[in-house]
Length: 93
Image 1: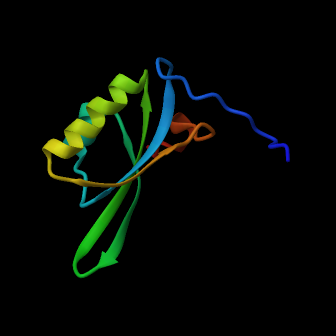
Image 2: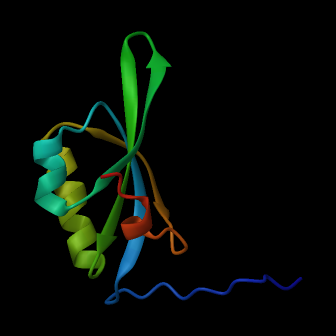
């Protein structure tokens, strides 16, 4: 079975990722790594999850973003490589 899109993930190359955390990410934190909020979802019991999109230069920068989220006590729900997401086309002005 052939896939119409073939992508190569590079350890030292740029990439776009969708990160979902338990909690709400403030603008100040987003400014630390130039991410954009994709959605904030109510998950019940007074809790929310936030999905953000980030462009990174390499895996080291991605690890730095995950560490920032950890330092702010935001539990990581998912991390998905999103190669077809164009962050510049989806920034609301």
